[in-house]
Length: 319
Image (tube, rainbow, N blue to C red; front, side):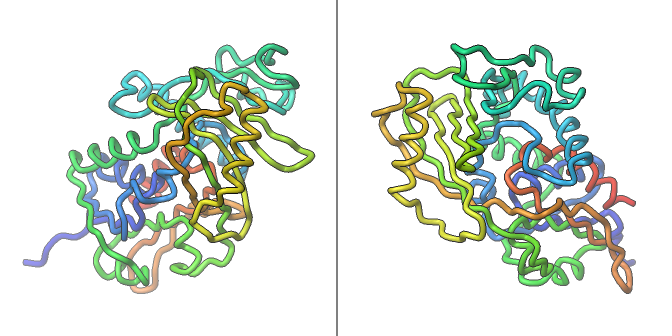
């Protein structure tokens, strides 16, 4: 008697998009395997600053819906921060005005208001948003996926046909890898560098966008460290931290929060955001049978839309 493979799904990719998608599929009853060449803690997702906010991602209408769906999940996960890595934290989005946001913001984000001069020297928004400790969160996603019956296979995929030959449904969550694997030249790297320092006592986060220079500076307090950023270098593939860039990041952050100057540096990190003009989230029925769902191209907003995209990808995978 032939083995029933109708419920089998292979998710290719182990970043936050791949893990969340695999988890949603596994908890919906599918038999799910993740194929990835490296564990989640070695992906770009592990480097993410990981503040929830729908920015820099298209198509805007769909991205907002995915983000709001994800927000609901993060609010629930924030009730168990030590376990899930998700906390609701207050801070300022500098360079942003309340009247620039749609009605969704005031309706969905209680307490959203213009920041005061003491909070930020310029126009900004005070908000309480999910801030995710990515190493903890990725570990939690993986464990929940395994508890749901999923399996993780360490495997370098050089052709999606390998996965299609092994399961009737394949979900492509390869991020920047989709550039070569699909192939999709519309996927491009945007290099981001971070500096991790000891937290001198900051309890709120801060994001400051400078339209004149095109730079965004941010400070994200995590339980055991302070994340300083950042950079956004288009089409740059280098993964080695640049000491001059690191010094520039610390200098910019210290201008916003002087207590950061002199904080002991713990680590330097670099990640390549998988940028695309628009997220590709769609279903293909392959010639000869089988379903291929694409879920990639989220840029720096993967954490923001992860759960919304995962649930839509799951629906597409199950038809």
